[in-house]
Image 1 (cartoon, rainbow, N blue to C red):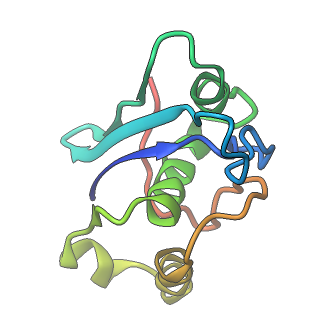
Image 2: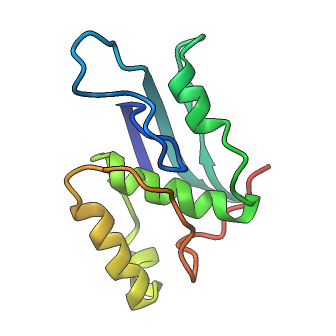
Length: 129
């Protein structure tokens, strides 16, 4: 899987609203990410402007177990980034319920908040170090 985007940090992974996107008087903080599969699992790097509070709040959330972070990162990409691509071989071995879930993520027009919850079974088995 690969994905890349630069987004306004409107909600954190717990679904808490960080920025009112309808307030034209506020410049929304930008959160950028590339994500890719590696030989050891997956790699995601979040980047934001130093001092921006909303992206830091989103990324520095320790509410999730390490074994759930890969799955939640994949959800985040499918819900928020148009530039998300997967390998056919990965897709073909997924359980039908996960294919259905990924399709719902990809077809959503935009993320409207709500806490992220790891899928069962998980989409990926990445380990965060």
